[in-house]
Length: 101
Image (cartoon, rainbow, N blue to C red):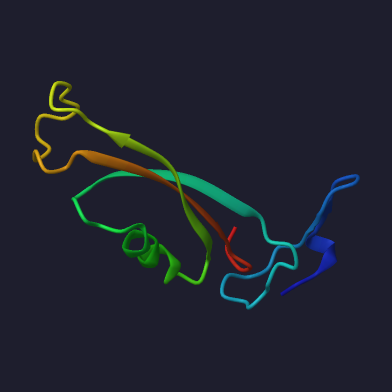
């Protein structure tokens, strides 16, 4: 079921048409999302190892490091975190889907 009778329009905007779930409708210009994710990393872990996990997903367009934080021995950030975790990295993950909103 796909009909423009079930559509709504916004002046200067997109035309939205509702379709049943499971139909293989694809967006021509899908929206893009960016999320920043931070994590404590063990010594010796390379950025390629971390980014490679996200880049396996078909929706992920790019992964890039945007920040690094080094904790000093004098400043405890999280007492439950093991001592060897002294570096936190923040990554910006950009993704989009042609079929999911």
